[in-house]
Length: 371
Ligand SMILES: *Cc1c(COP(=O)(O)O)cnc(C)c1O
Image 1 (cartoon, rainbow, N blue to C red):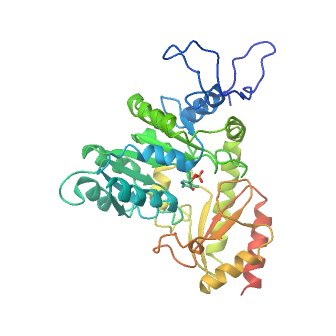
Image 2: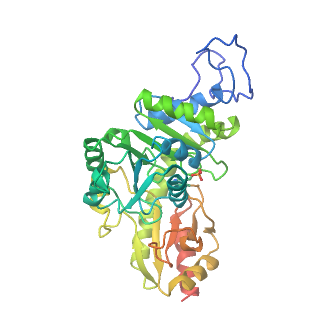
Image 3: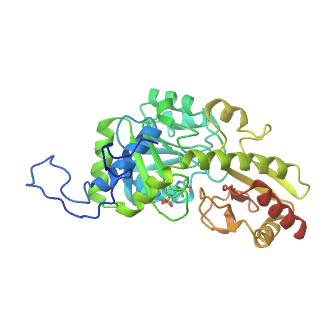
């Protein structure tokens, strides 16, 4: 609650001022920042410091114009012709970016089941028998399949092989999982989702524990120019103030709804790490401070039944994205770019902070009406 606040003093504002300036008075002495708003601006500092505190990162975060901007920065750590290992159920645009790196920069991309530690580490060590990976990318829980990785074991194994480890921590948030505490090198966020939390901002952030790695990411941001606007960052900091309350409520709602859905005769399968029989349950219980608020669900009746269910809901919003205060859902395979290993009938539910009984009544009613 104190992170990202201006210094206390009689009459000082409680919140940092919104700085709208592209340029700053300076004699141009190197290191004399801020000088120019693409390289550095006080508009970013409060948020960058607060996010670093939440992630237990010794250096300030770097805010970028979107989650993908942050991911592109992190993936720039893979040299041309290098090797990149990533989960086959990563965020689909991350997979698209990796495919682009393979085409343009000759990066060898290897997709793995991130829940299978042996498979991941053997790919990291010597996928083609010649050289270890440069970077292991981890998403956990994965989007949209909710597989849970053994993060500490992956970090130890990847470091032994000489690879950096980057974690997309968007789904968990730093309140549920802090990858730096497990030794990860880089963390990225789609701030668009839980951190900002109100579906009104597109924003990203990348953090690195090692100042030398952070300096490379900072250089990438300045040169590529995918920077964040001051107002978006100001809104994200405002969102951060209620992150704990929102995550707590959304997680409680999600666990209750997952339990009820799993017991419903019109539901074929439910994935949520909080369910005791979920394949990720034991690992999530050991490694995470909660189970997140995303549910994977397959209704009886296939993709048509899934589409009908989405149409029949009144409170739940049919929409992509996630992590807002309002509950949303979508059938992921309606995107032709989604991985073919994601079931056609899988609905991804992002549970918000509404009254859980209202959310359940809407789901139950829609399940009944589409039976
Ligand atoms: C949404 C999302 C992204 C991309 O973030 P944008 O802010 O949309 O660019 C990356 N990773 C995950 C896990 C996401 O959910």
